[in-house]
Length: 120
Length: 106
Image 1 (cartoon, rainbow over the protein chains, first blue to last red):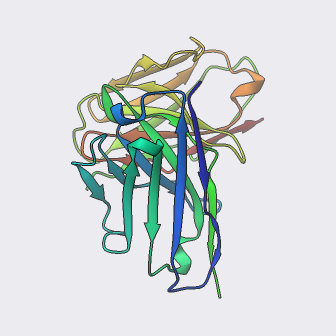
Image 2 (image 1 turned 180 degrees about the horizontal axis):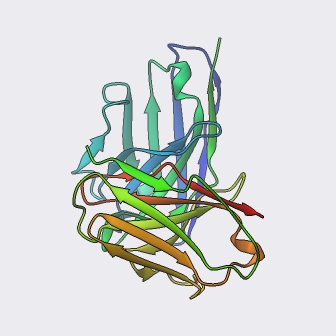
């Protein structure tokens, strides 16, 4: 069955960096767009970025552009999010999410989430 | 950017009730709208995509419809497992989620 397992979350000081990883299994990873979506405590969902199966297409929303970088390693069935210059407002649960084959932004499987806390 | 609004923000209902949640897009998104269900401490779950297509395994008491830029999620007979927060999501132009509607016990 499809599984997405995030790791790498934790406590970091403002201005610091963190790298999230997502291990995928149970499907042909390279066939799917993958996204990162976050949810601040008690708040709604915010889509951050996506990457095509071949890594040819990458997009980041303005709130993280220039600070966060999405990447993938299809040989390792892994998705990554490099987060630099972290701010307190980046505190959230970060979800690794699979896009459907026929719809890159239809999010059909989600990981359990990784909590990132940015605080001094 | 496309903005999404949802109403109500909270809905109190009883088991067996017919429940409807409305979502409005700030501009045309064609039929590129999905609905997700989220329970506390859990990841969201895809219920419906392309306005009215039920995701595999989702009970048929869930349905979706649209009129212009107004979209509706309907639960025909609310079950105990349905108390949760529901988010609409447009994917016509990148991705934007609505603010959510919490369905709680009346």
